[in-house]
Length: 110
Image (cartoon, rainbow, N blue to C red):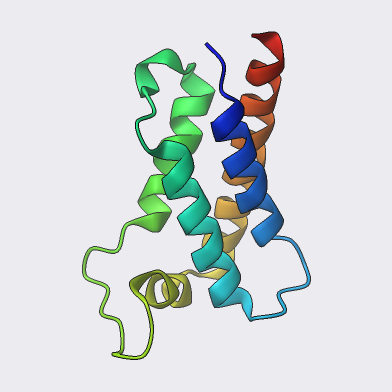
């Protein structure tokens, strides 16, 4: 079960969350959300272990834009990123990092 694509997209998301945030933290988080969306597209979560499923659920919950209103000049991801507390930002970074490592290991096992 190769997961090269997920490993790459989550590595990209992790890179977005690393310092420096030259376009601002909200843009970096929005960019990470985009990469995670790509990684999760058509992902069969039933093939993941409990830890990986937990990280996916945590990331998806943090990405949830229900009830988020974006100003006309900004995207929904930016508006969502703005709502995240420092604790949630750390939770996102940790979950993305752990999941990127998990998929990287799995992609090398195949």
